[in-house]
Image (cartoon, rainbow, N blue to C red; front, side, top):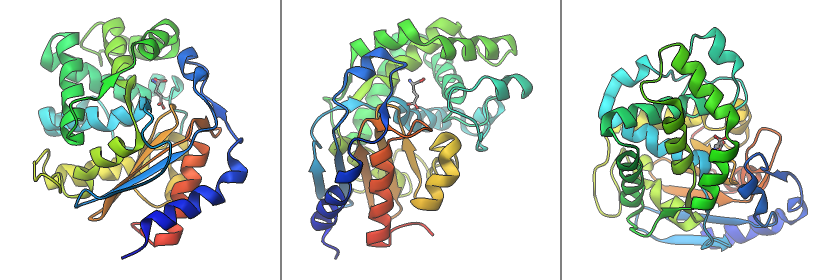
Length: 308
Ligand code: GLU
């Protein structure tokens, strides 16, 4: 077996020269207040063994990583019918773009760009009927896949995004005008902002994603969350759409299904082996963690664990 702890320590060391590169997301004011010079990386194996470096116990805003869990939940509820409202093609556009949505008549390309995730949240709202109940179900699902009841959200980040999330409200209203939003635009985006404001650390995230590395079944406690077929498709969408318009670049350099968030986190799946999470809040120009992306590239180069 590879010496994972040593590999993580090597990666941390090799990344030192890049620690001050990139910028923290500031369009959500509460996110701009985090210490920019943080780094953490964790991997969790199928037997539950976890290896970490850096501030792996400090929680951060998972932001768009939450879209993996909402997509999983909605797919479970709506099955193939979900794709009437949201596609599964890479967008080739920034995460918050309005342009494509206009000429594609309010049907977002995939569930991981903001418009797609808002539609997914809308579908969950329709199912659970109340905003509180919808959020509770999303959070409970994340707690279940993480096997951790203590995961919660940051109300300051939530409120901050509610006060400044103008583009997301515009996306929701545009989809509503095309008849692709069933609930009120404002309550849909508020619920979306709330699940984006969930906080986790890299140890918790690496644990939470294991079910996707094991055909939908938690390898540690044996709980089945989704079918093998669904797990395959979620991984495929993570690979092709998990990093917005940099998804191709990420696949080229890293070669794993993964999802990033503007809070600086990235989760990645090594099929049949492990879950990985990295955190570093400075972002590259596409809105993905700069150090996080490099760390994952180094990890797959050193271990040979890419899917290609
Ligand atoms: N809540 C963020 C937004 O809607 C999520 C974006 C991201 O993490 O990429 O802008």
